[in-house]
Length: 183
Image (cartoon, rainbow, N blue to C red; front, side, top):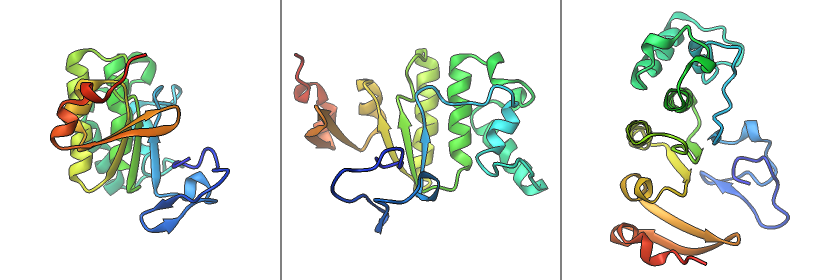
């Protein structure tokens, strides 16, 4: 609903003080990193990152430098000419985060950004996501990873059957296990 891929049957969606209830997805101040990172396998790492700036890939020198900076930020500077199919799972996730680094949207949605990653890759992606929040971006992270929640998230909303069951901040989120009902 927030990204605009589905429309609400009732109510309104306000983002950054503007009503986006009926706004098309590309017109919203939202970018989404899908669980299956939606990389274009026929494009190189560099071209996939460049899509975050310009869909037509016609970059000027300054924009090319930004692409290289984004690749360096996620430790993929040596893989710019490779296709996503030649990358590991962690590298693909970092590539998807690099694209997010360049998009000029204020709100970024990450759907399970650490799923399927080993511990090292998970930590690397977590650090990258933290950097995005330090740049003033609003991040919405959907995850089942409790350790990721404890270390990265400043506020946690627990959902069950489409309803918020807990709104945790500060020390509350450190004890998130106390708020999760299993059953």
